[in-house]
Image (cartoon, protein in one colour):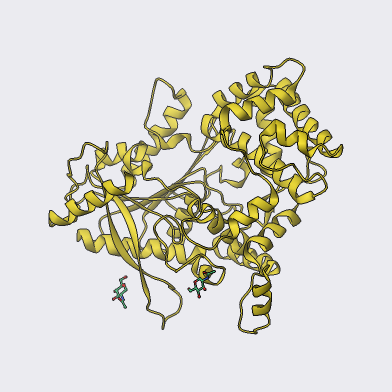
Length: 484
Ligand SMILES: *[C@@H]1O[C@H](CO)[C@@H](O)[C@H](O)[C@H]1NC(C)=O
Ligand SMILES: *[C@@H]1O[C@H](CO)[C@@H](O)[C@H](O)[C@H]1NC(C)=O
């Protein structure tokens, strides 16, 4: 249904001559989005390789008037939606500045598939630098499409990884990108980080309560006890898993903890303080049994009739399938592993000093990389004997990650015209920029919110006073930077 509407919209927009008319009436859509394609180079950095690929982009021109600025949303990892150019604070700002809004999937994600499949060799062109060059290509393309001159400002915005990419893009192409709004951007991109899990403990205690923290810890320790006593089948039954937990495998145990902690951080990032309070109430539902309360909460929020498979083998198997339109490539998980395992790192780990009972060590992530991307099958191993065969090498990640940090900086971005916004209860807070660094930079930390609460429209019925103030400041700044 979804794609059918896009096909219809695409047909309508081409038949109306000027694709940018944007005033397509349709009952199916609240906002009139249109989509079209632009050409970009498969490899921006080989001067002799002029192979082009065609990528799809989406536009919202409802508010656009010639002379208005161009706002481009850079998607977060695994975001396959167009929602932020349909609704939200930037759309509201566009209504006042007569801006056009655009977004597109990063290369290798969604419909933007430059190669026949997502084999390790074929993902060679999936790098941060290539993605930035796609953004620059798109900006050149859209300027030509709309025939706008250089007085027209281009402003990027994004959330999480998308925010980091947006800031790096301005750094690399300052003559093409005038300003950036980074909402919960992640700039500390070392190989691995403890801070998210550590901060989670503090967030649960401060926004929830010490009691809540203790109950969660007891629940996790109950899981730990079951692992120690080899009760993998009981865990399977309780958590509706597809397989018993292999309580002898460090990888299976790490994968289990990683998935369940992710459920909590994901929930907090979507529901903020109210989410933590909900979670804390749920942890008291069965008095004296935090483990069962936790299980019930997970089931209530994330449960499905089908079994859940957080097993290490299941995880790497899904991420190993190189074909498009498979679970691992549709969700973008395989592509994200590739980026993390070859360049970005940023693996979350918990060591023996962690408040968590389970260990999520670096070597677990490295094994995941090797299994999902490396040579594993008999035929791969035969092919490795060929000296021209390229194969995943986890050791290279250390150098590639250092090179990326040298290239783009870490917590000191040294770039002007950026607003950095962060949530005070975002477990990723310490990887973000929370103080202004250069002239014309603004940094805001919003109390009581986690990730990117500021992307939505101002809503006095649910936003706190501080969130409204932050949104007003973003709005004012973007409006100013849109013309000067
Ligand atoms: C590739 O696309 C660029 C625009 O980005 C265009 O100028 C060039 O002619 C295209 N090359 C080929 C070989 O089609
Ligand atoms: C992936 O695509 C390449 C061509 O780009 C092809 O040679 C290879 O056999 C494909 N791999 C799989 C597993 O289909």
